[in-house]
Image 1 (cartoon, rainbow, N blue to C red):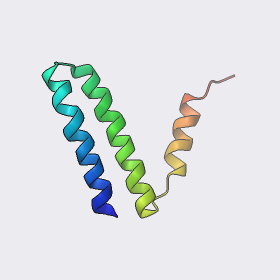
Image 2: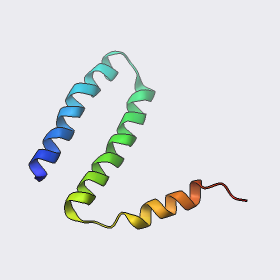
Image 3: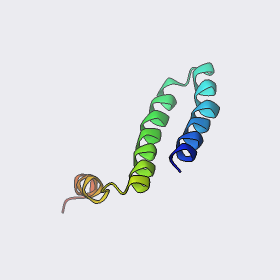
Length: 67
């Protein structure tokens, strides 16, 4: 299962990154990298049953409107 997960993520990188670099879209590449790393972490966490609740609760507490 892990090899399939990593293969899919590698395929996404191979398809997206060269186009972004070729078109000199460095800001978009940075955003893509951040979202990609978050997605990779979440997919690995589901695969290995890592806890996901705490990081997302802390993030939601930070992003939630105060009032």
